[in-house]
Image (cartoon, rainbow, N blue to C red):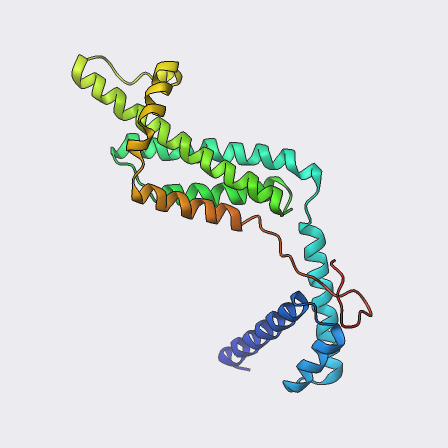
Length: 225
């Protein structure tokens, strides 16, 4: 068999898998799905076997991703670490280049989303989506804050001729106050765009499959796995 034929066969299998998964998500029974596959030219026994196999795969996936309370603490820690790391990298790039690379905020959203899922051992769900979104917002805020401090320090150095940037002073109450008072002036249209993309990405990555998988021998209804 040529490579082209093998790839065509794999694509047909992917399409059939997606079809069966979508039907199960809609709550169709295994028997009804097998009948629809028959109408597409799949043999009855092969259709039933395919539906049973995909049913087991989806049930295992749903079970594996199901949120548990024990996953929350590791997810919070993972999200916090990702937020600090992402924000620090963003600020570091600002220091090295002198420019605030806005699209890196999007990357912080993705980093936090993946970190939360990994820290939660692959668990997903609404609670972890909230953690990921909060972490991404925190990471962007951290990056924005230290970028602000860098430019503020550079301005003071030019005006007063003081030495190098003192990062230890960056968390002083006075600096925090100035940042809070001026944050509105530092956020433009592109900032809001990157923030929105970061939040959307962080929200989607820990989203559960939310598939209703018919139980063994189910009729027209379905039971969540």
